[in-house]
Image (cartoon, rainbow, N blue to C red; front, side, top):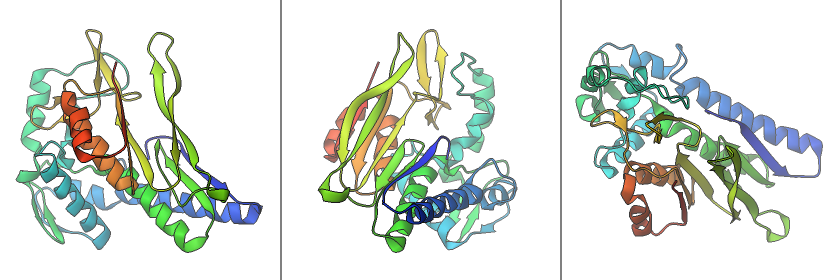
Length: 280
């Protein structure tokens, strides 16, 4: 999930709390095991090693591929799950190592949704191409956990996977969950809550470069890459947070906003959603 995961449950009995936490953990591990690009024994690894051969996928994977196709269309091609191969050149560890233009250009022929063939349930990549569900997997996992909890118990629960979160319902008495939107004091290097948001239903998702970035000539470059030139999106906000009915929907909007760079705020205003944008 790319960060700390937590479950907050408003229950009085320890056995119920354990049941809730164990169910969410099992859900997170299942999705991590199935869709992480860092494993060599899952469907993503099989697709990435296909070397041009067609791969038939299961229904869940097909649904994620359909969603990736939708994101690609809505972003005018800026969201592209084949751009993960650019991580061979970029390392977003807070340092200042910038890959050469030649290193990036060598990978660009392997990037592009239009270069693959997706005819559900069969996916065919060109040799050397890869897919990466990192841009949608965490939010999907949160929604799956929330759905599971709805079938398991009626408790008020907040599920938070690496800063993307959703709630099953308001807390007892109709009280909302209070969530902090994280920011960083650039001078002191200290994280703090820049804003508190009350959440009685739905989800919050955040996208940005607070943790994953590189610096170039004093400018912080986020980990979100433009698939057209293989470089970080220019003039992107430090972070974007969106509230929406589902975590997947919230995550889609934060990512689309980040990809629009200097026009992020206008995009979110046009969408009419609750949002919070942080810039330097």
